[in-house]
Image (cartoon, rainbow, N blue to C red; front, side, top):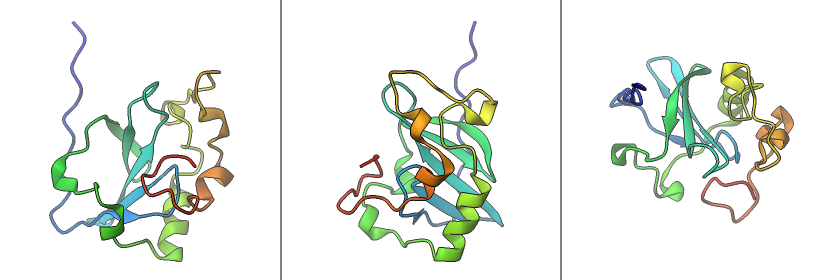
Length: 134
């Protein structure tokens, strides 16, 4: 029997998701001194998001909990330049799905091979409000 998915930890009550302004690590929240980061994956080939806490993968997410209130990007604050640099530095090398397990996806059927640190640091294209690559 294959074990089911691990339940996601609850985002601490005082934490607020911030728009990172990027297409790869599109959401970040500082909670109890740790960075919670959502990586947008190439869906449907991979789960929609992977949740990281301080660059450690906690699990994949296809359905974001409603309590995270991520449906309206415009309602969320944007990271400062220094916070964004901190998050991107922490997440360096973790753009492609599977990189957290030492096996980054390099399949012909997805875009993981383009998810370099430089791509992850690039601003999200104007008009792209859903976090998906432009």
